[in-house]
Image (cartoon, rainbow, N blue to C red; front, side, top):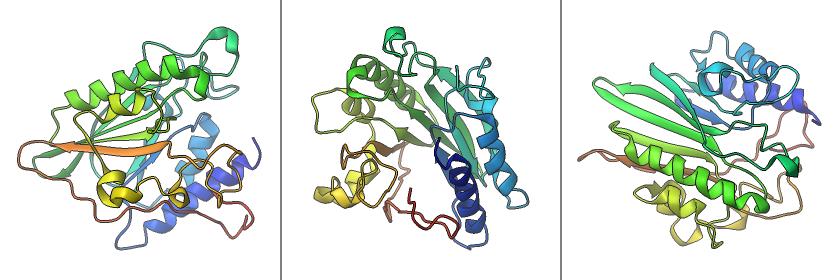
Length: 253
């Protein structure tokens, strides 16, 4: 993939630099991180920062390759400063069609779950995923979305965040977005109100992103949440950042 090593190094550098900030990130969620060397590149840059990154096997099928090819891998990873209580991965019951040869059949996407301890006697479930891509995979994506949404709604943690690349425009008739959102709050819509689909805040096809294709601008990535009892998750800011590195000023991501 073009500039893949630069991408991985830039991700690690951005998070590493965050560690020096008193308002540093507590949690970073990554999708489509298919190869083991990519994990290793980012993890190496996080040494001595206080961040911990999940291993490939924590949030993927036990037969994930990731050395020669991304076969049977999920592409999921999480980076955090918070104590990790447990981790699990549940593959979706359906993948892409073998005959379409778009990689979805060989990937093993699913629901990654990382339970964190944000405070004493409090639990936070982070559920992360990346659904089947491309419009023609809607049959698989809708079923994957329902399974992911069901897992988020079934969580009994004090706080739940369901996040990832859902690969669906919420304005379509496809049920993927609504099946995930049911019983959850969409942080983007909650904070931005009527501007939540502003093209300048698109997460795919953003005109400021030199790597996006011609389709778009579209919103494909979401952070949804719920909490138990009187507890509340409040959204105090929402941005779609365009990141540039000194090494690669002409490329954004």
